[in-house]
Image (cartoon, rainbow, N blue to C red; front, side):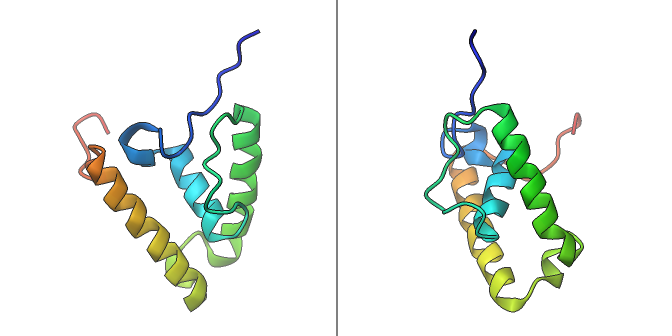
Length: 100
């Protein structure tokens, strides 16, 4: 039986600027994963469990970076800034298209 596995955030399309990539980056922010963990080879069920942990970690802040304590918000801003740069280098465009 062939199960689909995740390619890893650094091999994902558009430099990891995807829904799964966001979950991974947020997991790094909250310390749920070390920044060296790309989730390469993970099964969908593992990604789902991580999503649930990330969702719970966001709840105290209303899912808004502006409500994070300074240290956590700075970490979030750093990780997101690096991801945006990497994404742009791999063809990611933050503008929504007609089908988005």
